Length: 117
Image (cartoon, rainbow, N blue to C red):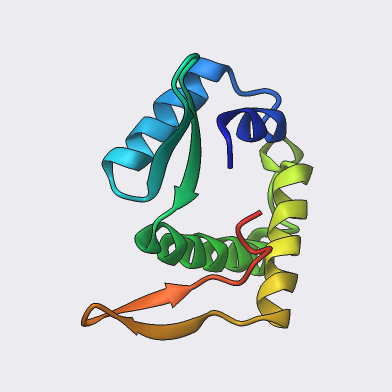
């Protein structure tokens, strides 16, 4: 996704905060940044294999939270948009489960299309 696309999907996040978070994710090898314009510099971000694997873990934690805490959270701790995205990702995984594949001698997770959105 392009930085602008991410910004549109996260309307309440300040651009400098988004930029900082993307840099941290890149430093940790979870996203890859590729420039598609030199002037002005513009970048697109893609998940790396470890980033997709982490997505599966975060989704599992979200599912656990829905099952065990969904009705018990105080209204101030709930965020409707997060729950909506979690439901979409869960439904995408039901349609196309994550499959394990061998990659460079290591196991890596393939994330179904739609589960990343």
